[in-house]
Image 1 (cartoon, rainbow, N blue to C red):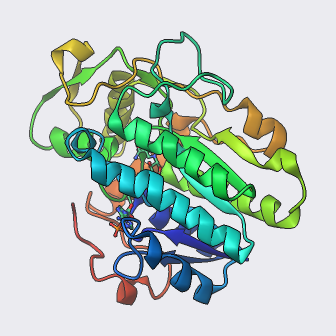
Image 2 (image 1 turned 180 degrees about the vertical axis):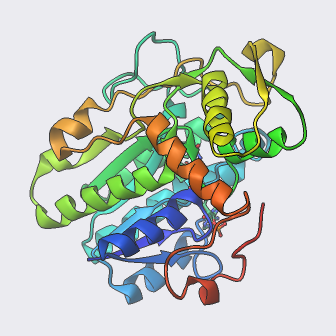
Length: 317
Ligand SMILES: NC(=O)c1ccc[n+]([C@@H]2O[C@H](COP(=O)([O-])OP(=O)(O)OC[C@H]3O[C@@H](n4cnc5c(N)ncnc54)[C@H](OP(=O)(O)O)[C@@H]3O)[C@@H](O)[C@H]2O)c1
């Protein structure tokens, strides 16, 4: 099987190349400058020339706070760009897997969100991603939309790397303790994507395999609990750790308001695809082990040949 993923340096794109390599799946990144989601006309020709069995749109404008002031760019990439990837997939008659977010919900419910729950994003980012879901569904019925949450990995910018880096500079870190979510390792998302792509391509007529699904790490946490776990795992391996001071969201104002509850219920993907991601704590330990083994810098990719293709390799953002 050959899969094209949009984006090169993104957490999910990089993880998908690594996990694809291990699973014997050919995963090819299609990224800037070859394509730009901001330019819908740039997508079809390069995708077509790669002749994949499926395309995964993991590229997105993911800067949640910046999106509040750069709404036009966020919508261009997350709505129009997603629609253009799906339209190219439709022309090529291949399935599209679109990544989406827990931030399509407002957090008012007091239980994990189901796929069928009413969406009501609080932010420009959340709205642009929700409209991206709709743009994809409108042009390519052969789609899966995977909503995930609180993504971390040894790569790029994420909460785990930020916490470990802060712990090298200070003894105490204040962390929000009233937002509840589903920490998710990008490697697990990648494994999930590979399983979904396989079943979609093997069963092109099965409608139940299409639509919106939640895919997130098992269990739940607050950011403060997540931070505690990060430091505990790091400490156990001789890495940096700090004391966590739990604070309310009101003490840590951000430009974009985050939902207080964005836990995702993942029963549907387990029932339909037989897929269940590991407990977040278990996957966290694996991620921290790799980060510490690599001296907390961006780890080397384990895909042969990537060093040559990726001049940014090794850079810490
Ligand atoms: N991070 C989270 O906590 C989180 C939570 C829920 C859902 N999600 C969703 O999961 C997906 C993957 O997230 P991630 O954490 O892997 O994202 P990420 O690490 O921020 O990477 C974003 C990717 O998008 C690419 N990109 C941005 N603008 C582009 C453009 N105009 N044209 C082409 N590529 C562009 C970047 O390209 P380069 O490779 O060129 O840098 C990068 O590969 C996204 O759809 C995101 O909305 C993420």
